[in-house]
Length: 117
Image 1: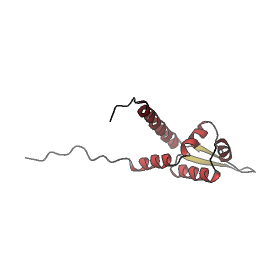
Image 2 (image 1 turned 90 degrees about the vertical axis):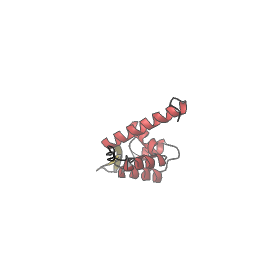
Image 3 (image 1 turned 45 degrees about the vertical axis):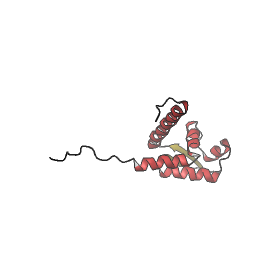
Image 4 (image 1 turned 180 degrees about the horizontal axis):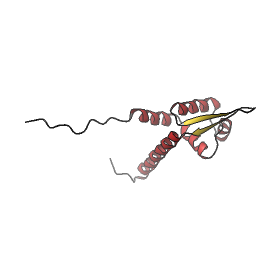
């Protein structure tokens, strides 16, 4: 008897995107930064002033990580004094929507709306 031909390859998790999600959720400030940007607060100094407990050092690490993933971009203006702003990239917009869906899923789990399992 001839062995049945396999029709589906083994499915692997999305390695890079899963690592991104894990890294962003591991950074307790990234979601806050996205919230600030959504509210039009895009300058680092203003971000630090608006969020209790957020230091410039930690914010810079968070912003750098998000830029490395391509979620945020840095815009430097040729002015005196220098001005820097951050904004969500088109890819970052997609990524933030995925995080929003994960948050909705978490809320369903907390309310007990999700099926048991």
